[in-house]
Image (cartoon, rainbow, N blue to C red; front, top):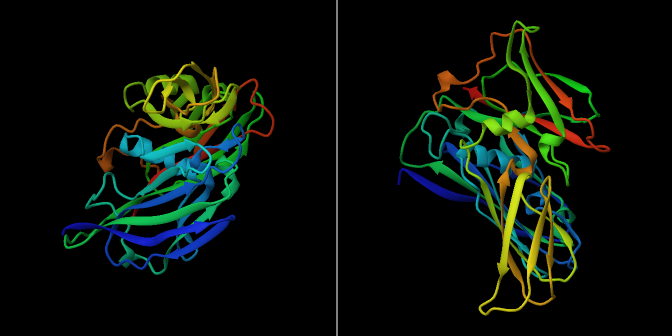
Length: 364
């Protein structure tokens, strides 16, 4: 076969927070790593604490002390959606005794099995995958979970990648009402995309960030000139598909809060999850920021919901990523400075953070 899938970490169960250091002993170039986390819903109804991806606190790919990838589970999930323009597979079951599933992909090429861009173990000395898990951060009262990792690699097809895509959280900072946060961005590699994340439960990302400015060499050139985050989100209309997420919830005659991936302009519908009809109605009230309220007129049947919206996990792409031609990407290597100016909105809340994430081309 030209390509194949290989298991590099077999499915393992956990009953407490964990950190796994996994040696990547592959010899073939890697196109994609897929981390699958399955948190258990074990608590009482109405005590949901987070989306399934929140069970993965951090994913890193390292070569000794050299960090090639470093993202949270939520960041990984969102970037995979934007990169492939498709909603990642997953399962969200807020039902006691049920396991949900978060599929988190690390993409090293422009598309699966990109022969030019892939992570080549032959060009590294000590590749390892580090995964940090937080058992209690996902679903309802989660006390257990499963972790597994697969890789998509080249096999009989001989390729010589010229580089790979790496993604890292460049900075996390605390938002302050109507205040500027200035960040000098790295200039070592071309950018495929630059992301800003501002997730606050109950609030849309566009209500957390006012304006964004991207400046080269002390304003000699200004690629993003004071656009509001809302303008940037509006400009993405039609470029990426709406984020659709199926969720299963137990029926309770009390309004409880639950969590979803889309954080902006979220809407939902619900119907009974059973083979026969039952009396009762249900309502969904999107609260923004990846949280929604669900209410059914009577306890009893389980419900299946379809939520749709945009900006998964509060992540928004800032650059016009229009081409898979490397020559079209944002090459900053000849600049002296590249500064991002993020202006917080008027009411950002208390101790609310934002993250800047860089997706860059790293050449061998």
